[in-house]
Length: 115
Length: 113
Image: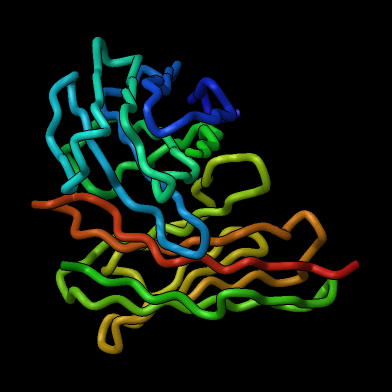
């Protein structure tokens, strides 16, 4: 595997629920990313953390709240989601954020269904 | 911002045939172009990449070509095998400044045995 793990792998939640997605990387990387992958749409970058600081917020609604307590862990806290938020949420990491050509290593994703 | 278009959206070939996937990009400042393969139940994995100072790059059965003037780049897979069946994504990025990858919408490749 790639060294990036995500839990849970599948999640069903109601619109009033609060849940969190977890990502852990075992590669010693300094940058971590959240992407949203919807059917028949390109991967959408949501957030970037470099050395535990958020360096990119791609106009994501506030119902998605990221947290990066250390360089190995990344969370995505979810609350009052909408059905259109149903998607595959992918976490990735790279050595650092200084260059766009750093290889990004993706986790397997969390398949989220919002009812 | 950058816009990447990818074609075709689906591609079916016979085992042993070649497969070609094409992408175009809009930002002439883009200078790094990776290709990712995503198998069922897994995240995307980098399979090959190319920089703007190179016109072609090969790695065994996989090759990527870049035409900077026309702003398009292509993935070529020769002697396809069933295990090549997956979704392939192209991406483009400006190596400095805003360094976020912009992905194409993906091509589902099916290799028929």
